[in-house]
Length: 354
Picture: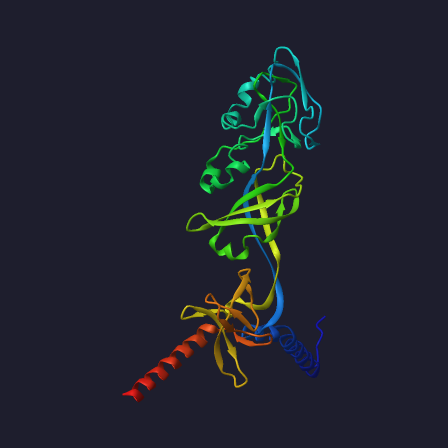
């Protein structure tokens, strides 16, 4: 059955729906459109917590014990146990070594032990050579990634080094094979390489937080050196205990710095004029003037800048932006106007002198 709606009611429904649409445009879309065309930003005090993701290598003091004779192998501690120097770690009951799963035990560790031929912390013993964390894993990188070799570690060589974890846990051993490892629970290092754009996030001596697979650790940036055209080498150290220290080598990490405070501004507001970094500040008359700034730090989207004044490279005081200053979000446009105006004034002075 077809229902007929009176003309007046149809008109009312149409007007009502149109009113709802207009109301939606005003409440929801209008603010977004206003933000999109907003031409200035008001500077406010605030802080940024800067962080970046990377991957790097653990550098730590490690000692590897080898078997003095063949026989049945027994361990006195479980992996992860904290032990002291000269504590008994294992025992070997003399006898013929039994091959496990058809594999010669010695060949199982050949690649790792080849990298450790000249490592002076490979010792024949059943006792802990150093205090630290008891481990039943080696990777062959213990010599290269040692504190004594810290300054010689390069990204290219680290990535090319064959580092493969190998379990030492077994019930029999042959003479000369590795039987356990002790990783020092003292100071350790994390070496990584950051891209040029991330260099300004952190400074030498700065305290940072390392977020690693087994948890977060407080650490310090010991040194920053330029390794090549694209990357900087970071050495980060900590004396805090890390749960995975005994097996960790090549790990992903997030480096987070402490809060940096100052005036917060969008990076789109920043421009360079004649080699000087700055922004265009709007005055009461609506005119813009270039004002130099000093960027304390940036996360790539926003920057923290000094307030009121700062000292340049020559030690001179430079007046800069202040809280509640209104800065242009289209500095390229203002720079073009500024340079054009300066060119006209220069030409005018030249004519007057003639």
